[in-house]
Amino acid sequence: MALDLDPGLAGAGNPALVKAIIGEMDGGAISFERFMELALYHPEHGYYRKPGRIGTGGDFLTSPAIHPMFGWAVGAWCEWTWEALGRPHPFTIIEPGAGEGALATALLDWAEGRGGEFAEALRYIAIEPNAPGSDRRVEWREDAPAPAAAGVVLSNELFDALPVRLFEVQERGPVEVYVRWDGEAFVEARGPVATIDGAPAAGRFEVSGRAHATMAAMCDLVERGAVLTFDYGYPVEELWADWRRQGTLLCFYRHTAHESPYLHVGEQDLTAHVNLSELELAMELAGMTAFGPATQAAFLTEAGLGGLVEGARDDLPEYFTRRRAFQQLTDAAGLGRIRVVAGTRGVEGVPPGFGGPA
Image (cartoon, rainbow, N blue to C red):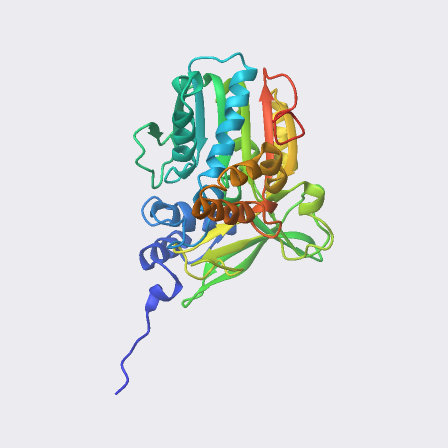
């Protein structure tokens, strides 16, 4: 006799989270933005509340997880900023969305391995309210610190994980996408028509209502210094190009990318590409000089990452490890297409990676 194997709510993802989302819907619908927020950031069951999301045993890879070289390059960029500011002490690095701290650990190891005044001046603050790391050299916080007199604010794949509003263009204009529970699965519903300047004439697209404010808040965290951001994104003319009809929303589940946000709810990552024009505008309004966007491949190559590979030729296992990591970090079809933007305040000249001196 066959048994009843119906998984119930577990068929849609984390059953506790699915139940919580259905409860909030209360028989109706919620915006896709709210659905994405709950799926990723629910205070108990959200995807980002669990450790182990990044890496070969997780759902996706980020640049700091590929090899510490990425953190070494970012560390050198921060040291350049410190030099340009006149070697202030302390020099504070603040990283919102630091995750388990792979970037922080690599950067601090690099500075300590070199020794000297930069390492002595460093103070590293990681803002991570979800599943923080354990590096004791890092000051782990759930909220933002007071502004630092001098320093750098870093982010890596922070903005593409912010909840977005989802729209679909119909005859009457851009219609906001809502989500409801039909008794068996999450399905889409249509909300009101919106007026959005410059919106695509057809297809689907996303709008982040939080990116501008997030970047403005990051710029306010340092009085003198820089903001350096790595993220998947495009200037608005590329993001909303006429040929792009399906938007940029993607899901990552066990290293497989797909376009179904209503599967594996709470068990998969949800991302949408960033409007880089909006980030640059936020920097400029905050009184910073904006640079970029550059591709990560160009940024790391100009910064000299290739030299780290060649420098390990006397140690063949490490040489091949670095060469493979360099290829991954600069792959134009993968991590290398991440865009890099920076803003500086009180810093003269063009920074490395954007045409400035390495």
